Length: 428
Image 1: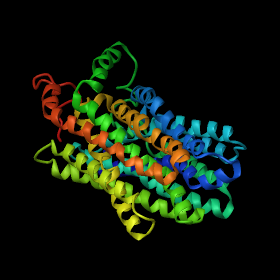
Image 2 (image 1 turned 135 degrees about the vertical axis):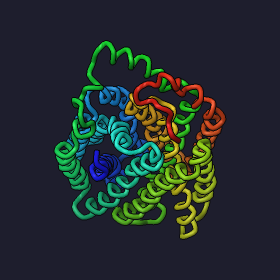
Image 3 (image 1 turned 60 degrees about the vertical axis):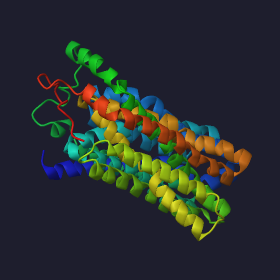
Image 4 (image 1 turned 90 degrees about the vertical axis):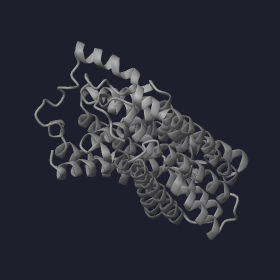
């Protein structure tokens, strides 16, 4: 594969991830309007956000396993089409129940995208770029959140919240069509049939039965799943509730609150990329430093965000909040690289699906929903003061993984004389 085509694959995959999160996060920009129109509690608003991440968590594993066998590109196109159509459905929802169903189908469509998309990207680039590309790709979620919240808020204030959903849905459908034309299974794997290595058969089934237990075969990989998921509880809560926070405590109108929250989502995305870059750079000579980067990001976000939400509203709070946001998701790149290094390449999409499962069920789904329930009892500020404490549990998981990482790499390495296809000694 040519280098230029590899970057085209990355760009289009990244674009679909933007669409994914634009469709997911546009809801947060219109929280104030939905709350006023339908008289919804914060808990119900949080459920509309959390149901997407919940469906992603529940379905990402089976759909990603299917993608490894049926075809990753076809799975991506089908997923993008579904979430875009579901977003258009949200635009015409007439009640909370209808909106909930529409959001549920957005989650079904998005379920396999993150894990399968990153597997496609990593399959066309060198191993030495894993953490950087993982952080950059995952950061597309934050950048998509920026666009979804900012553009959604502006469109909603100008034309109404229904148009905000409509714009996101149309954009996703157009991009899915372009992806289907430009990216194909055959071009990703020249010289073999599109589903040659994924076709069902006794040999393939037996091989999968041998490989799948490797998803949970070490303490360090399980720690990477758990730590990454718990840390994203913090990032998910911030992205979902900062528009409402600025609307209530800074008295900003919908468009301005969305734009301001979008800037903080952008900072979170930059932190994801920076975390992946730092992980690759500092671990060149000592692979265990990946864990140290994750631990520093987790502890730093705990300290800074706890301080930020105890400061009065104003420039000082915004500065400390931005620094905390920069670190709160910096564990994404190192976490994905750890999982890639500790699991077989033949089930890459399934491994990343397992990571996505942990991130969704432990972080992105409960983050907005639990924060909403706490806000009904303590107020939104009181709820956000408690959110950073989740980083304590994430740090504990990363410390455990760090302790076991090197011995697990040695134990899981295939014998030099009989390496499995696609499982040669992994570069850090």
